Length: 411
RNA sequence: CGGAGUGUCGUAUACCGGUAGUACGUAUGGUUUGGGACCAUAUUGACUGGGUUCGAUUCCCAGCACUCCGACCA
Image 1 (cartoon, rainbow, N blue to C red):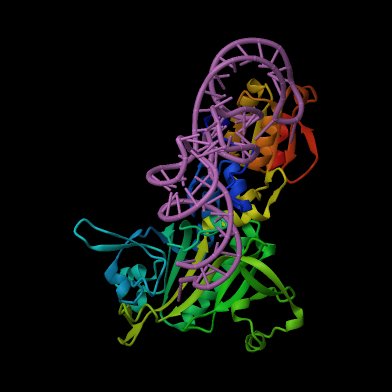
Image 2: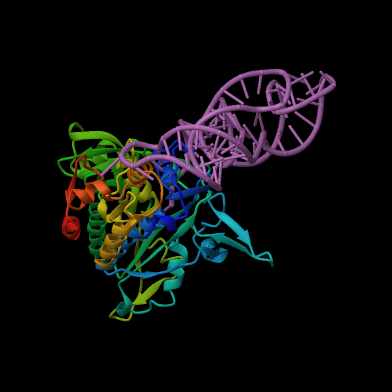
């Protein structure tokens, strides 16, 4: 797209009411806009990043057999009363509202209950199972304290997958698949080497749950990592018994702050029982469905990626999640640049074309701040030298290449 | 929710119990054209309410908002 069509502008200064790095960079670059504490609009550039992440998540979920749907934000009280999670004393981060007639409604903070309820309409036989259904949507949590920019908001974008299996054995197979899918996601979005499968509290229905924790000083959690074994333990559950259970030794562990970017849970029958979510097995006997849930914070991931990939000039997006692949800067050479822009678009390369009539310095500064992986400069100088200048955002040196070689260079 | 702090043009800041200044931005004109370029002119502001005072943006109180620390965090 042409940058002249982009209504957002970059800012030199971060707003003084934002301390966290992810929010500072994302606001300065025009990716998000703060509406209030913990609530951010996602602007065109930010939406492209969110979509990139979502697409990778979709792809990996689909590979495990997941099917996507769209749940509702508005939720009815009765469904939540079945599991005793409507009461504000039990769940203290509800946003609630009422219909004109006084009926109370909740704004969903998660979807175990409505999803279990929904499935009672579709699950009746062992032939219907397993089902892996997921949802990428905005959820609402009335956090006592929003903090850390988009890392902990009151309204945020996430993916939740719910698995409905015939029994624990079938569930366990999927659970392992989900772990791999999550690992693939973090690898693909460039957080792989900093993200660890982390053992965490399993609650009342399983021994452990698993979190995916990305090492970062801006994180809220403390984890102990065994680099050799490539796993970690959350401080909340880390004791001698647990270490023994996991075959870990204290001396091999290093303590790190980390961001919880995802978590997966075995839910067992916790939800299928109150919703009478049952099926008939081969013998015609009724069985409860065995459930699991698999969350992933998409907007939190955008923040995490920003926290980890930046330098003094701005964001350095990993290619897989960058809003565009190429930032094409025209330094008073719009005629030539326009041709290149059209050619690149024809080759299915995502280009942000800076066609604005502003100084070169400003274009460079914007480009560094926005952080698109490849910068291509079309200038009098470059054309005299036989082409365009190309530079990767994460490298210092640029080089001149021929215009016809651009697509080769990028792919 | 407990504790601490901060609210001044769109953004970042300065000064001040008595006319609110600067930079960036924005607008117009001109000069520039490879690292947020320069000149001129213009433009925009004291969170809300109450109190003290001759006079409050400044001091006091309350509310609201935001930030940080803690608690919380399927």
